[in-house]
Amino acid sequence: MFLTALILALCTAFFWAGFKAPRHPLRYQSQAGFVVTLCLAGFTGYFDWRESQTLADLADHIDPVPGITDVSYVPTSGEVAALSQVLAAAPSSGRLGATQEERRQLADEARQQHTDYWLVKTALFSDSVLAFYRERGPRRGWTVETDSRPWLILSSESGRLVLFVSDESPRPGSKVMYSFSPAPR
Image (cartoon, rainbow, N blue to C red; front, side, top):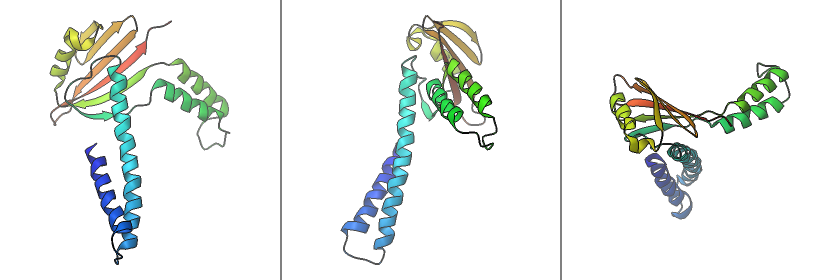
């Protein structure tokens, strides 16, 4: 978020220098700088939005671990299924490394898998993360099925949530991978 705001501030300065300021020798470079920083702000803004959306999706299931320093966007099972359908429908050219039939089979398998993943980094160490989820409040109704470091497997009537926690050695903090599989219908 900070990087996007910084790029937008630079973009504003380039806009003023390229389009509003009195004519000067670097006018065209300022206009080009405006276009480049505007594109870059859109790019970084999109990823900021995806990260916040990823956390919001995780928060639908369980309280995210405190102290999050980074969020990795992982496509949802629905997005993977849609992408695999597009690839399966693409004409076979040999460049995709699989025949049309193999791609159709992979698309069918992707549609059958309904597991969503989230990957976050936190300033907390793995012991603190596991202690956080051993408390009832953050789990929001999930029952501890297995508590065997580095795994914490939670279940509820809506499905199963698996947490895998690993320390970020030698840096302080840890990575937490969440995996949600809905209950069979």
